[in-house]
Image (cartoon, rainbow, N blue to C red; front, side, top):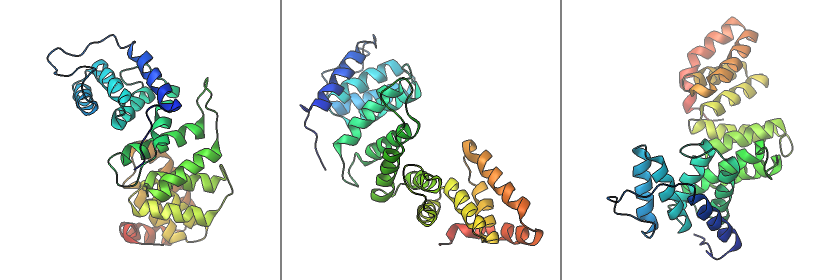
Length: 264
């Protein structure tokens, strides 16, 4: 696992940022908590996590900031998420972006204890580059977004990264359109249980003329769709069903429960 030189310019900038932001908390640790800003990073992280779970978000932010200054990756990640969501702090996507970027710049070996934080940072950065951050130096950069999704998809096998990468490839965002490459990533993601990947995979098959199999995947995906995605997934399925004949629809519905275990 790569280690960070805590005297590097990027780290000093982040430390300065965290120090300045810490001054806005205005909330001291509970005197009975047994931790202070001098405590070790893991103790601060544990305190911050417990405070967050108890709804004491100001104390959580303060603890995470001190732990982040001491190089604790999990605290950096938690703090970045709070800025991204406006959770206990004023929402600030650029502040979140800078912390995610610092996490990503450290590098990590697959399987290390910081892998989850690193991968989450890659996904978050990819999303920011895909959308841009208004009023900040972070502009839309589809090529960078696609590269970050590829890194998370290929090196770490993350289904969400595989799904987002496939969508970008299908749309020709950040590079050339390649339906076969997109199908490969969609197939990998859907075999890991990603409903959105299953839905789009089924739609691609349907568009290619594999009517029954495509309809089966589109139908099966709806059984597992998360609430935020059910709308567009249902639209895809209904559109395909409106084109298919009655016999194909009947066979596809019967086949749907079986397609989870199928491979391309």
